[in-house]
Image 1: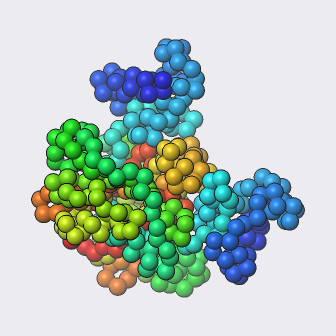
Image 2 (image 1 turned 180 degrees about the vertical axis):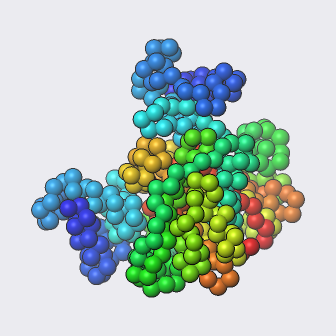
Image 3 (image 1 turned 30 degrees about the vertical axis):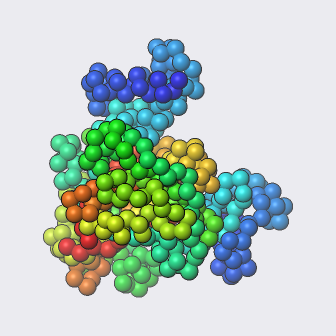
Amino acid sequence: MYAQVKQMIAQQIRSGAWPVHYRVPSEAELVQELGFSRMTVNRALRELTAEGLLVRMQGVGTFVAQPKARSALFAVNNIADEIAARSHRHHSRVLRLAQEPAASEQAHALDIRAGQPVFHSIIVHYEDDIPIQLEDRYVNVGVAPEYAQQDFTRSTPYEYLSRVAPLTAGEHVVEAILAKPRECQLLQIDRGEPCLLIRRRTWSGDRPVTLARLIHPGSRHRLEGKFTT
Amino acid sequence: MYAQVKQMIAQQIRSGAWPVHYRVPSEAELVQELGFSRMTVNRALRELTAEGLLVRMQGVGTFVAQPKARSALFAVNNIADEIAARSHRHHSRVLRLAQEPAASEQAHALDIRAGQPVFHSIIVHYEDDIPIQLEDRYVNVGVAPEYAQQDFTRSTPYEYLSRVAPLTAGEHVVEAILAKPRECQLLQIDRGEPCLLIRRRTWSGDRPVTLARLIHPGSRHRLEGKFTT
């Protein structure tokens, strides 16, 4: 039964009757229109969201998704460029941009002593108004001294850091997690939505530049990479 | 309050009083022992599980976790070797090993026609009796003709395929997902546990060898890789 509802909705999307960003009728409306039970409709919507055809914005509604954003598994790219390459609009919201004393985890990663100053930024990146990445980043003060003076609504940390400390090596640790309640709110996702977490460390020569925790809603993002032996 | 409970449990683990694989007292027992509310104890256990200190085996109990299994982000390794390298014991359960007609997705990936025969295996890999990977794999019949005759409780698809069609290139697509109910059962996880899905395609020369869907419980596995520019 729910498979039938899924198919009907998928058909609306494929035919273009419901274009990308189209607001899908509410659960109650679909129950009335399609004549299936609320449980059936709910399951269909949940599965289509998990499969990436729909996107649920917590407290806003359910929309037809743009195809899942992709980014590189083995490289570091500018998120603004990745979004532009998909002919979408990037904008960002800067929640924090300040200097603070390094906690031991950050100090260890950036090869400084705990308590020494470190830059800390928290930025939400949007693709056509849908949040696709929460970037929580610590930056080595010695390597990028003017980090806190940048306007990251007009450029990205990637752009500034590439200029002052060109990347020569990186490390990715990838996990599937549930984001914290505050992070879910910023990403406009349900608390139960699995997220892709990338913990990235980069170096410029032998100097560690940055430690970033990049959280992506699982339904809106994937990582891709090819390799040869 | 729950942070206090977390700390008390973490302390038991760090001190070695509760070693790896130790069965943690039940929620009810902890409520009685520690004098905190059930809600507080539940939250502490949930967060410690999300952080990878505990592992919940659906229907079995909660245990002290071995450190999260790691595997390579940019390479293909033998899971049995990865587990052995951690001084743990690998074993596997073969749920399916047969020839079947290729559906269009698999046919496309393996460069054959839909309906042509393809090998299909489904294997659960265990690290010290904890399921860490559900491997659902399609294999090109022309490249590995004796695939279905192998005993994958004694070796792994990796070992056989490396012998008959040495890997020269691979592709990884990584996503965070909720596994299907049947998959959760096989992996002994709660339905709400985020999983790391790797879709892997490999080539030997110009011939596609295999298309695999590898699902890992998020709390038990992570991917790591270093790269240079």
